[in-house]
Structures are given as C-alpha cells and as structure tokens.
Amino acid sequence: MIYVIVRTLHIVACLLMILVVLLQTGRGAGLSLFGGSGDSLITTPTGSSFMKNVTTGLAIMFACTSLFLTLLSSRSGSSSVTSRAPAPMSVPQAPPAPPAAPAPATPSK
Image (cartoon, rainbow, N blue to C red; front, side):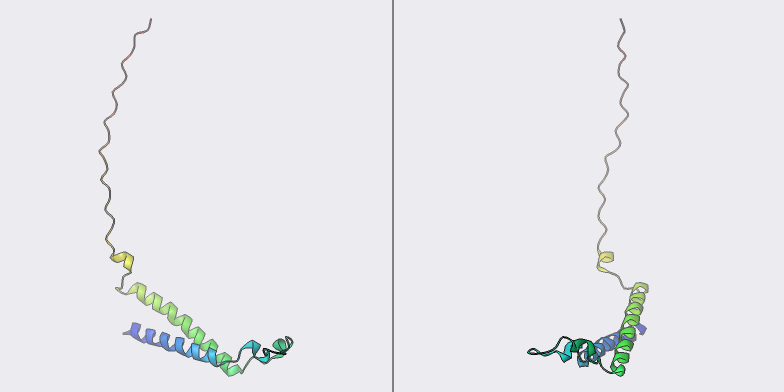
C-alpha cells in the first residue's frame, strides 16, 4: 500500500517538475536570432523566486521518493531478473589422480 502511494507521488513530482521547468524562461531568452547581444545574457533576470522554489521543492521530492522507492523495493518480496534465473550447473570434476609410483632405482657403477 505504501509503495503505491510513494510511486504515485513520484510520478506526480516528475510530471509537475517537467511542467514547471518548461514554464520557466530560459537564460538565453534575451538573445534573439538576429542582432541579439551577448551581454544581455549576463543581465537577464532569471525568473521569479516562486518558480525557483517550486522547482527546488519538486526536485527534493523527486530525490526523496526515488531513494524511498529503492529502499522499499529492496525490502519487499520483489525480485530481479537475475534472481529468477536458474543457477548455472557446476561442471563435475574428475576424481583426483592416484599418486605416481616412485621411479625404480638404477644401480650405480
């Protein structure tokens, strides 16, 4: 139940963050295609503080729900694809070779 609620909050945060970022004016909004000055990039206002605060709040919410969903999925009974795969069969090992017989002694002259 909690997983569904957090996942829903995560999806809502994603969609709202996309919407808020698209509504903001870009940094290069003062530049035009023909005759725009590069100096206006530095002095261009960057938007309202309300939009910045909303974006920051949504980014924090996105990060927290991402971490929480990761914790919930690791603790629940869900499994990954690799845990469902059958274990590889081990190759049977050959029995160890018996110890070699000592070499016959040669008579010395």
